[in-house]
Length: 80
Image (cartoon, rainbow, N blue to C red):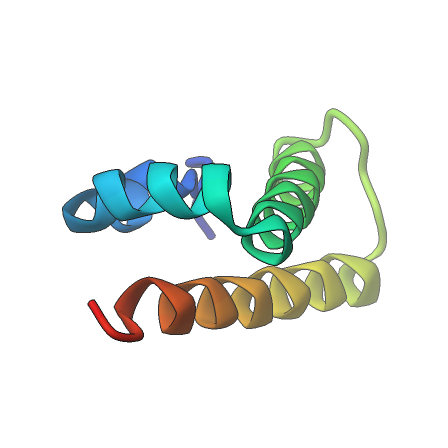
């Protein structure tokens, strides 16, 4: 288990410019990013016991984060 935050700019450094451009031009992408950041922060707080949750809740949050990251990646690589 990692206690390192999974920030999008660290996960996809090669797409930094595209992340910024899509965030500014695509409302759906901006919403996905915000949702990802909210879930990511919640996972990090759970992992570091700042806001502990049960194992099932933490696993569910991780799966949600992964699904959001997958969708964001698809948008970053579409027609790139």
